[in-house]
Length: 203
Image (tube, rainbow, N blue to C red):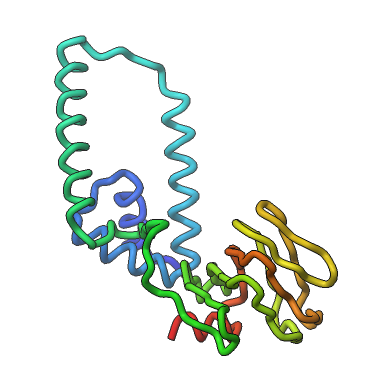
């Protein structure tokens, strides 16, 4: 149940009228309150629709130039701060392609995983997986549904070769025979939050 104060906070948040400290506090609350998150999304959609129905007005040329200069100055400062700081903006997280931290080796030599995102409340996680050339991943029962998208290299599953851009889904309870890669591969995986591989990657 959302109370009156939460409704007011949600409205102010969508309008960008909260202080940075209030925003952080509200976002922390939204992350654990699905009903409040749904309200915020609804308000954002409504606000967007209202903005689209408003008549278009051109500002005076002097005001327009002044605003654009302020935006350029602010954007340059934000870019410099982001590049020089390892901190993240509230609610946003970035990983560079060359970031080598976070990889965990599996019990299978030459097999690695890296946790990208974990949404326990919504029950799923996004990971990167990597097999070195010639690695064979043992046959196993899939404890939960699995979605795999091959980014690079080759992955052989159930007699089928998957390459970059190919996708594979496995239902919970299905069985994979030995999976292997000839050239080595990198893949994107979406697994359930309670999957053993997620627990290993998050540890």
